[in-house]
Length: 486
Image 1 (cartoon, helix red, strand yellow):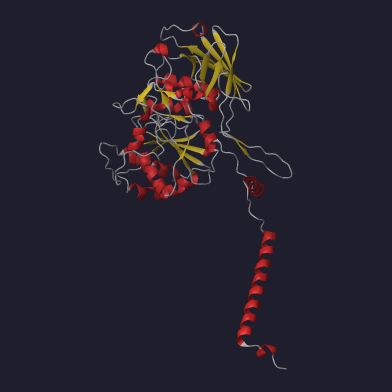
Image 2 (cartoon, rainbow, N blue to C red; image 1 turned 90 degrees about the vertical axis):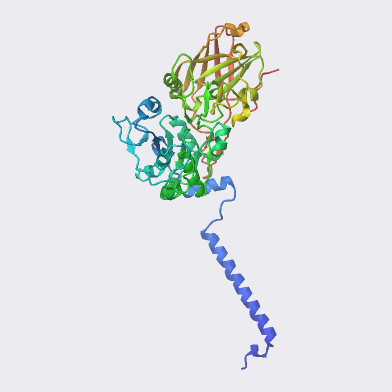
């Protein structure tokens, strides 16, 4: 029997073969897609689906704790002894993993572990009137990682006069995935300093954190990278430049404070941003932050409140007294200000320029700073009445703090203010959630994630008051405004 296909013209035979090939290909692809779906479910398409998918398919790592942080402190054999009072405020040998990096062996051993940095004479340094120690300090990133410390999620860097609040730093870093590349810190408060250096750099005195995976890669390339930057001034500028070359930019957290200002920090500390205080720097250069105390005593006094409620320290709460026409601002753990009249909240949140620019010849105008500022009256009688922290106590989740009136000036005030001697503030201990609340709700094997931006607390002035004012800090109602009622 002759083949029927042989009777078809070549043109029709070609079309038939193309049709058969297309049909069979479509069938095979469709069958493969069905089998693939049976074994591999579709990827999540929404945030909640993504969280559910990752939560049910893998066990989340344990929460980040202070033991997952390793602090590297840049110091020298000549400076560390006079900076020990600052170091002792936040370092504890039982809970804090830290290493002091020195330029040479000390005459007497410091109270925390130390490491003498390697020789850096092979690295060029050409910044006029700069300090070659910047190269040594930059290489601390490599030296600390090469030690092979176990179970470190974050490497934290600072100077020997950097004062950290470790509990708050843990809370802030917990927001980020430590298995990814992160470079976290903040720039200078001074516009001029940022212009001279860069706005994209974490200033070393304020401290910064590098995730362990990024530190691993950076340690491999740092030495070769440093050869390209002899013209830069500081260690922090060198580190940021090398991190830039790896394709990573700074993640800003406003709780790191370089404090590139001079003089009286009052206006800055009473207008802290709505984020946890992480660090303070240059505290031996500025004026004491409490009256009738030296720099060291003043910071030690502040840390009484830090230990009672670290998350709430310096957090600003504002409340109004309609009957007495007063506005009260509480910078928790530091100072309470009582203003005459009704001040709008945005006006209070701007920092009073009680301080001066870092560059001594600079004019003290708003453009000198990277945050909102307002005038600080030269006449003390035009300023609010200030009550500074006197004592603090805590127990069963509640905290009590007392603020004593600063009588440094004799000014005539309304009776409601004139008679006040102290202010007592009651509050609940603020939890270390850094603005993130996770609700684990078991319902049909689903987990729900709720992320909340941080919100300022409200407060009530307890009546009546004469010599002593009592303030209760609480969460604001859903629709509550921080404003004086008409």
